Structure formats: C-alpha cells, structure tokens
Image (cartoon, rainbow, N blue to C red; front, side):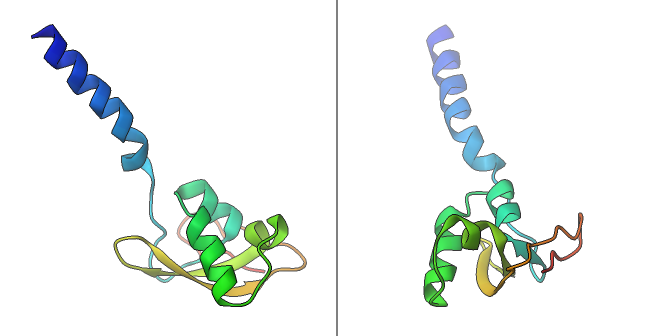
Length: 97
C-alpha cells in the first residue's frame, strides 16, 4: 500500500509542472518575455517569428509583440518587433511597444 502511494505521488510530482503552465488570454497582445514567463511558449514564439520572416535572436524573442489567438494551445501570431522595447500592460491588459 505504501508503494502505491509513493508511486502515485511520484507521478503527480512529475506531471505537476506541465499542468502549471498557463496559456495566454485570447485577444490580448503579449511581449515575448511575458509569454516565456507564463507558459511553455519558446517553440511557438520561434515559430511565429520564423513564419513572419523575422530573426530569432534573443532580442526578437523577448522584445517582439505577439497576439494571442487562443485555442487549446494558446496559439499566437507575430505583430511587430519593438525596437524601443516591449512594455508590460499589466494584468488583464495588452502589452505594447
């Protein structure tokens, strides 16, 4: 009985980080650095940049603005690169250049 409880706790502990990842909120715009902070968005950010023929260097990843299209995976699309820096709009508000 103790082994079953230990195995169950180990499995729950292993999947907890995946359950904790959030999706963006549909309709809001996000700086790349905020997307990276709320969920597992690294591959989506890179993909959105590549689809828009943008560089995928650290500055473009972190300082670009993306729109949250929503869906099960919190799909995003590239809006623009914020050369002067991307600004956090605060909770419940869109970020902006």
